[in-house]
Length: 306
Image (tube, rainbow, N blue to C red; front, side, top):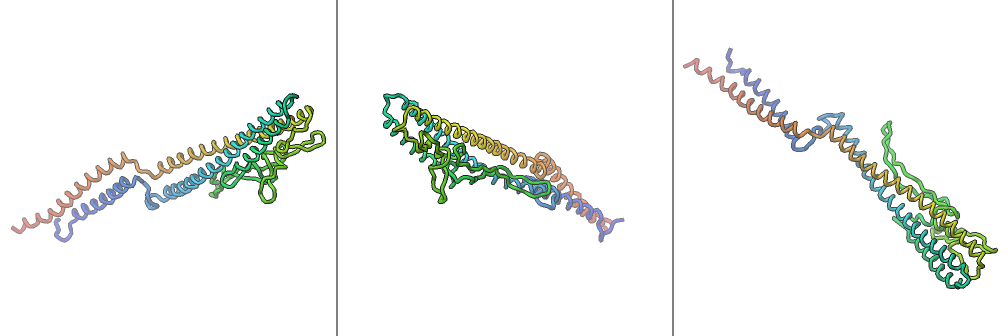
């Protein structure tokens, strides 16, 4: 039966066209944005996961910056310790030269004094971002950010690695620090004293002007003990620097992995979307033609009244 009041074919064609237009709009949105899940209504579960992981990745970016800051502090301390080792080695060489009877101990002491002043300068200059790891109060500590973790219960935490300062003769700082935060040259590896012929000497206060050959031999042992402690500290700093470098590399890789994982959840497959877009555009044209045919069918009723 043909009715001029109700055109079922036109309504069906119109509904099909609306569905095709909706799908076409979604596909065009995916093509233009590159996202398969751009908002929560697209897929609530995937959108929630992606949003959380993007937030974590942003935190990892901050951790990466903090690791870079920590690495700079450690590298500064290591550079200072390495240079100080070279200076103390020169002091040791001067002591070896002073064991020769024909050598003026006063002249050698003048050179040693200059080297001692250089050691103090190195310790005072080894500062980065307001922190100096070459002179510090005994028992004080510093820390560097090492990682950002998300626990199974959903909580997050930032982990850090602590580095404690020891101002003893076998400690890990060149000098100690007094209550006002200034350098204390009477403590630390270079400031700790040892008795030589009834007098107390440290590497920093060493004066061989009136020493005998035996005293100079004891002074060489004092310097060698300081070198051993400095080498040990340099090794600690090197190990910490290596750990920070490994963590930095891991954080960078982890960020890339998270980006890739999020992309698999929410990114659009452009090859698939391109094919779908072409198909929907064809379907749209056919639906429009179908609607036109359905609307024109009502005109055929006029032929019955001619």
